[in-house]
Image (cartoon, rainbow, N blue to C red):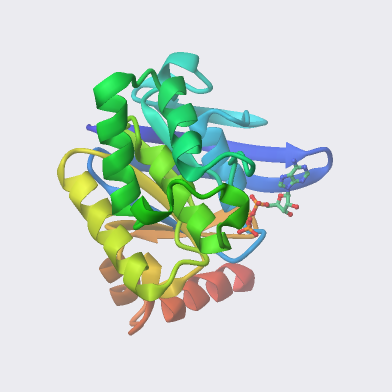
Length: 242
Ligand SMILES: Nc1ncnc2c1ncn2[C@@H]1O[C@H](COP(=O)(O)OP(=O)(O)OP(=O)(O)O)[C@@H](O)[C@H]1O
């Protein structure tokens, strides 16, 4: 099986707070897998463990067949965190140069990748500005550009389009499709239902449990729902009745 991410029976607690319970999921190569759930469901905690930033309390996570966390695997992963890890006093360009050099990109290649990533997120004209003058949406876009710089095999995006206007959101999704066509595996978290529809596969997360998974169409059809929101409510409700 061409599984790129394998999460097996993973649980996570912070002290006595059980945040995730017995999560198992598989993300295949080229797939765009969406983790859908309301705030506090545990999406960020799960993607941080997959990216190797947090460790599970129980269970196993393998990325590219290697147990995580694994330092070598980190270079194959582009991670865009929910809170932007940017240097506010530096310009957009300087931020991208910094991240590019961490990924080992130098000289002409570095310039090309920065140009490409910046144009993708519509920031070319703002690269000279210090980031403290950026709006929230611009900071998100710069973080996305930084995650794309080294053309990672796996892209993990935590709520990538929060604060981004619908036109740009659409162009970002277009690019995500393009990247997936070219072989990138993409894991994206969202609490927005219409965005969930854009994913090839979905995992619905609620109260730290994976309540359902499948393609948006499968999830709708198997619950006789017309929307993903309805399907989510069905699975959420069904679990509580058990
Ligand atoms: N380092 C931590 N220490 C203690 N509790 C934590 C920690 N990180 C997350 N939590 C708790 O875990 C739960 C899930 O948080 P998480 O950020 O993973 O959810 P989420 O689905 O990503 O929500 P949001 O979209 O609001 O970030 C929350 O109750 C949160 O308070």
